[in-house]
Length: 298
Image (cartoon, rainbow, N blue to C red; front, side, top):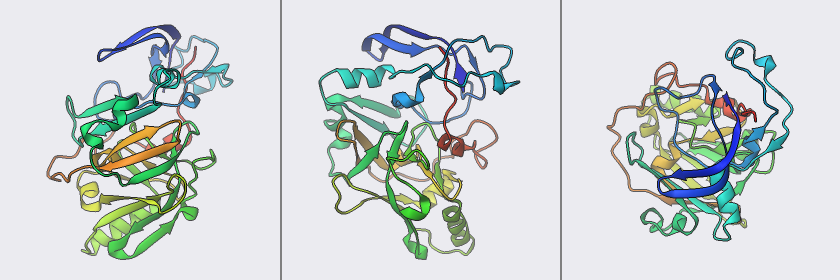
């Protein structure tokens, strides 16, 4: 995490200018992916993740004594892009695109009407899933399945619901892997060791307004080859950045919906992405994101 002061002023990014924005500047950090490696791409966080605390000089305690970090927040702030979307009067929508590769121009963020009027949204969507807002982009997972080996895990056993902070099942562009229940990872490993066809991993999400679930499919061979899988606990899960390798996603914050648009298939021959800390076969512990993130102080 990191800490630093909050400021109010103009913020400019890629030609977009936001006046009177609240933003923080990192003064000290611990374990942040600032130098090398790949830990995800941009996102727009909800204000529950932007807690503000009374300012303290923690420069002597970085990595030494975390108990000195303040624990009682005094405010929460909407970060600049979220504040702009909420106050613009236009569609409170954003879309996230990622090609599946590392490099310049491999991702794009679309705001307001552009979220559903770009080339990535020109195809028929898989469906619109119910979206929660308990700090993250929370999802209601109804089922996880490996049809090739006839294994199914119910959403109840995973413990996912977008209106409960007790167990988090989320989408997160800042997590570089899919974090799945350990029993799912063991089933994939067992099938691979037995030489069985892996097929797709499917995740069924509750649809907006009820009805048939929104079923997302991920090619397991690609997930394994790109080293995009990580075991978590047996409750909670994270659909991290690899989700966007298969789907362009448009979020409608007012309708509490996430609409998934399938992307054309791509080759699996690219080299695995390099993770920060350790190596690609041992990515950082993304499950910590289910327990909360270190706040900044004001």
